[in-house]
Length: 198
Image (cartoon, helix red, strand yellow):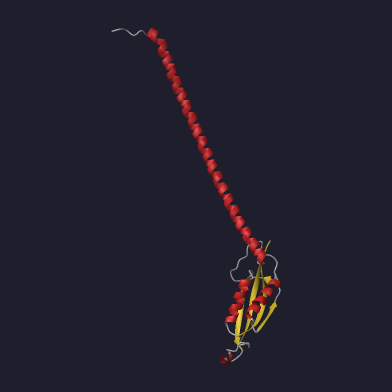
């Protein structure tokens, strides 16, 4: 058996050991570099996702704002938001009456006042007012009242509420088929609602 000649193998073994140490060092450095890059990637991905969520929220907010602005402009154009439009209310009432041809229709529009209802809460910066209008109506039959209120609703986009109505028969039931006389008299109070957004 030949003896190993360490003198001649010493140099190649040293080079091999140094190469192995260098390879391990490079592998460790590469691994650490990969871990650092992966961590940076995860951070960048999280930032991107957060930015994407923020962008989506902004787009949704813009869409919502556009919807609200569109509704606000519609309400403002109709007269629900802004100053009261007494003339348009009267014109709407008269045009509805022209279509219905009620025997008697008189009205009295009172000054604007704060709109109050039980459990009705108003947010700060918004004033909800109402203008009471008293109606005195001579009708042929009960349906005329509903036709008048529905005609008002269809002819104008303003919001109104009915506070009260009283109905009194003016003639005997046997004469209620007459088509040119007032058979019923109604006293109603309605309120035209106006919103003032500060």
